[in-house]
Length: 198
Image: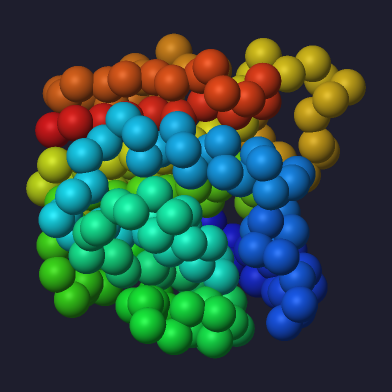
């Protein structure tokens, strides 16, 4: 994973008045909400410890509050500048800077549920090799459920962004075992959500 590539892509998008979906390079607010809804409606988060990996400026916090979903939220991101902005926008939420894929990193608590929205979309040069190892790491960190989304390979080549990576859901399903895997792909044409229950 290229942290420099990630830093360059996202930090140039970050400004105090930039909407969260733009800072996170989502197409628009409605698409961001559709992704969050696909993630939250299939998992019971009430009272759970939720780790939001690649939390960006913390827009998921707003989504949880608007849906009256009460959980123990912790957002984590690689970039110090992004977490600083998340703190500014959500001063009463918990965030930290860190790399969960660093095996030496320890979390303040073991999450029941992990969300990872969009963290595998940017082409950093080794996505195909990185994803299997990343999923192994994330499933080992959670006690119950891992939920993440990916860009869908059904998009025509002409509609795909040249700096993103697209996936076939069946290929991703094969990376997750043993456990129960649910694929949700009925909310946006260019996206799908994977729910892995241990």
